[in-house]
Image 1 (cartoon, rainbow, N blue to C red):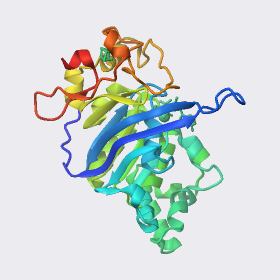
Image 2: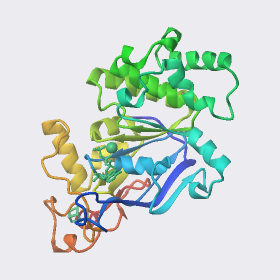
Image 3: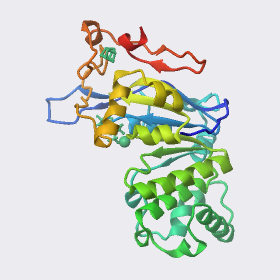
Length: 326
Ligand SMILES: Nc1ncnc2c1ncn2[C@@H]1O[C@H](COP(=O)(O)OP(=O)(O)OP(=O)(O)O)[C@@H](O)[C@H]1O
Ligand code: SF4
Ligand SMILES: [Mg+2]
């Protein structure tokens, strides 16, 4: 369990963010129909804190992350960086935000340009920034960051294909670090790796967090990894946050039927659950989990349960469930 103590100062905050996509199928059939990917999600990440966003495939984790880095525009809600609404940023502020909040993708093989050498991969964003000085400075910096991430300065002129999956993920982390960010968004960064390599990358991320006082949004479908690695965890289902608590509380006293199902299935069959995750093609009116929930009552399919605080310790423990909150 992660014993790390994070700062209370909030760096990044999502407040009631929503996103729907046009449903693309058929010529006329789906005109005006949508996939409701993220439905009113709120959370905040403190300085030097790791916030885990956990849930099964399709629950809206990547869409949430992409809204935060501005790859998708929110339909509504606010994303704030150090207390300022990112939608109101000037061009210069937005440029700075994009340097300070960096996204690391799940699949380094696809996110690293195979034609570039590692020096070019690491410095291609930097070259067009106001901080660019010259190649000599860039080479020194790139070599130092490679060594910090467990690679070698000799790797600068090699190409991505010459590295293993774990090494390529180290290169992706180095590329994110070169602009001296404050927040890293890690989207399933260990899911494609073998278990032993996963541990090495998680240790590297933990060391970097301490050394550089970084904050992380750590996205994973694996609740056990999240409990080990994160300070606080939000469990998502069908675009909604179902439970949010400190990792240690969630591990010991998961209260939501969905979180309990995730823990049980991780123990019995790896990380797969047995039920089906429905795509939202209509706005949710009842509890998102009602179609799979063993405790569902009539009210559950008619009303959306509010997020209620069930904490007995002072740190909020939020759950969205009529039954478990009573
Ligand atoms: N660009 C898009 N256009 C249309 N629908 C999309 C788009 N991106 C995501 N979706 C849909 O939005 C929902 C949420 O997808 P998202 O990729 O955010 O889930 P996820 O939790 O990251 O899943 P995974 O664990 O598989 O990466 C899914 O139903 C998905 O099909
Ligand atoms: S509100 Fe109802 S359906 Fe939803 S998780 Fe709670 S008991 Fe289950
Ligand atoms: Mg995803």
